[in-house]
Length: 147
Image (cartoon, rainbow, N blue to C red; front, side, top):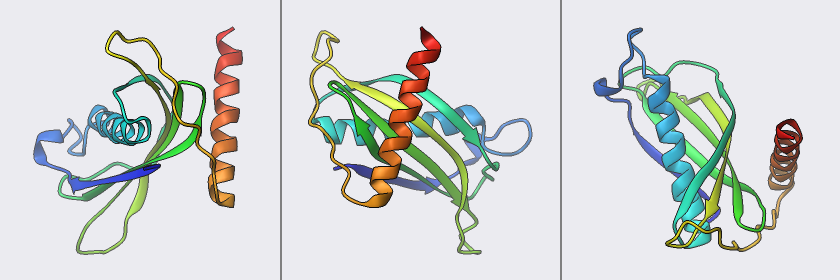
């Protein structure tokens, strides 16, 4: 499975001091959706290696319907680059707006935490190809900045 969407309601327990969903909670949802996508692809346990380019566009309101979509964008030898988009909206209005997006990297590991190879992902549509290129460009830039 190369994508997964989690859907749920933003609960009052996630509120921040401003009365909206706490950004850390959104980051937790991103990690959970990314983990589900990576593990489904790798068919084994995966760990988060990197979260980058997180962008908060709009706040999520308590009571909103939330969708967290994780899509496989690019694979390395042992890693999976996953694009995550969070959308939310009032169910009575019927529209969902993009609230947050980021790129997250997971690594497939064995029971001792050693990286294991993953099946290569081959994008099939123009949109998937563009997403893969964007992920690879971001990964290359991150590596260059770290050197």
